[in-house]
Amino acid sequence: MIAIQQITLPITHTDDELQEKIAVILDLKVNEIKDFTITKRAIDSRKKRQMIHFVYSVNVNVENEQKVLSSKTVQQNIPRYRIEMKEPYVYEIPKVDVKKTDQRPIVVGSGPCGLFSALLLAKAGLKPLVIERGGDVDSRTKDVETFLSTGKLNPKSNIQFGEGGAGTFSDGKLNTLITNPRIKYIFDELVRAGAPAEILWDAQPHIGTDKIREVAKNIRKQIIKLGGEVRFDTELTDIKINKNKVTGVTLNNNEEIATNTLVLAIGYSARDTYEMLFNRKLNIEQKPFSIGVRIEHKAEMINKAQYADFFDNEKLGTAKYKLVSHSDENRSVYTFCMCPGGYVVPATSEEGCIVTNGMSLYAQDGDNSNSALLVNVEKEDFESDHPLAGMEFQRKWEKKAFEVGGSNYHAPIQFVGNFLNEQKSVEIKSITPTYKPGVTPTALDECLPDFVVESLREALPEMEKKLKGFAHPDAVLTAIECRSSSPLRITRDKETMQSNIEGIYPAGEGAGYAGGIVSSAVDGMMVSETIIKSYGNK
Image (cartoon, rainbow, N blue to C red):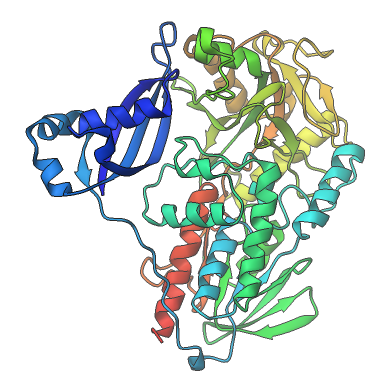
């Protein structure tokens, strides 16, 4: 097939006009195009005062592809449209000789890393056991709804823990900075499990919290159908090691299972598991991460700022943004995990702590839009050289936020105008915070490190220059956002992907090797590929 990039059309275009443009680029008649598939569609709003455009990448099937590519017109178009031959990507999972072992691999965690790791192991015939400390997606949803309405936290089943991982209660964003051929396989599997088909071509794909719940459930069903097992409300409480090799695990402090293959897809909030692993002499090292707040605006305001007169065009959906502000005196500040038409949610997994995150439903049609607004934390900021010092740094500020919010899981908030003027916020203004169970207007200086406060105060006016309204006086800052990535890394060998303990495979975001749904799933696949290879092909 022939791949074409950078096809630009106004948002008013029709489907026929896209096919006609492809024909012109390839110097063909429309009926000479057998079929085409959109592989990417992005929004170009740089000239939003005149017209917003869609920018397409497509794969095209035609007769005599080499002849078409060699035509003079196509050769002239190649630099502008990046035209090239492309072979279809096929990802194959070899079957393994299961007679070589009588022990199942165990995957700890059912987030994207754990699910895709287990899915590959199951397809190879290894019948993995997946354990998840939280509940299945239905019972977990009930636990979250109880917390939102009453402030009663279930430390085992919440927005961090349970089927699908932390991403289940997010936007289901699939944006990633990595380039990896496995991504196509992941997206195909997600669609097969119920994700919307447009994730296959949308430049900023998302599934939405409401849909990703069913996706996680369907992947679980597929693992079970292939001979795997998934256990919820099951916590890894210890590991057994003999002669520097893993030999088994203890679950819920009372059940022992022998295994020589353990995938640690534990996510970035499994603090008690980190402590247990450290005590069992796994090599763990400090890693930088970020800390800050969620910033919340009216979605319509962001739409107008991004799309001008086209702000209500249904083809564009709810507007997104990505901003960064650099400084000579303070630290850089950047937005992360932007949730269009979404909600700020309570993402704590420990009692007596406040943690925020963002969540959107598939429709992204909430009144507000929000994003993390983050400042980098370096290892030098930690209060000791202990490998788990970053985790304790997080916990310290989460507890302060809990206290400042009223010690009842109400989050402390401050309006941007008050924050910039160093004034305590007292009452809700024109933008209603979406965080539940509730909020407490206050001054955020009391629950953020000084370097974060100073950096945010410098960055907000600079970001206003890039996105009108970003520093609106009534915009809501909700503290504290500190789980954007893991504060540590469980070290592993680059080739074998095993830790210093043979048979233990640290994987995904919690182990320090990924930064989102897609990169976590990719890492889970890579770990499982290494495990499958160790068994040999059938």
